[in-house]
Image (cartoon, rainbow, N blue to C red; front, top):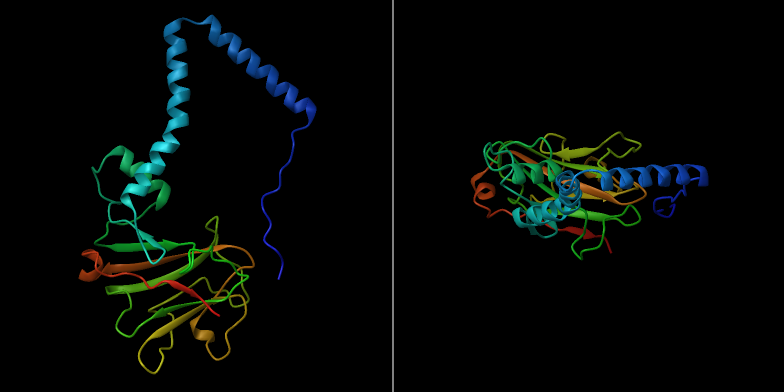
Length: 224
């Protein structure tokens, strides 16, 4: 397996860097030549831009509940719930439904808090009678850390109540999250990439246990 690589760093050519610096000098010179009122507007805009990210992260954290490594929120999709909250929802779960239509959980970590990686094998175990309660269907989708579907030999990016999962003898269901196909369990296999990945679980027309916050998705367990 190939090692997970970090992002490459490319330095600007000197000619480009010098051109950027000259433009910045021109901007500062222009700013100093305008009235104090305009200077205040410019400074205020810059400060607002710099602090918006901090405020947004705080709102996202406040509206999110995390259990067993899975994060969820029931506050998105509601009309009239405030510009700041809607912006936070757009960053976290863009284009979501109201919770009565669909519930969402995401995770990037296993039960020990380690990042999910194709370098390891995992299993998501749903005990009998503990599948996401719903009146429509549920699905589990895997993407890379950016959010793109994972290329794999069987062209499978999700499994769920409509994909033909095979239960165990006791009624429980195991979903295998790994690069290689698990022997005898291909129907319950969600292929993983070589690097880090994330999971999203969706339940459409969620049941009362979800709406009341009583249902919790089981943790992703690393296979020993």
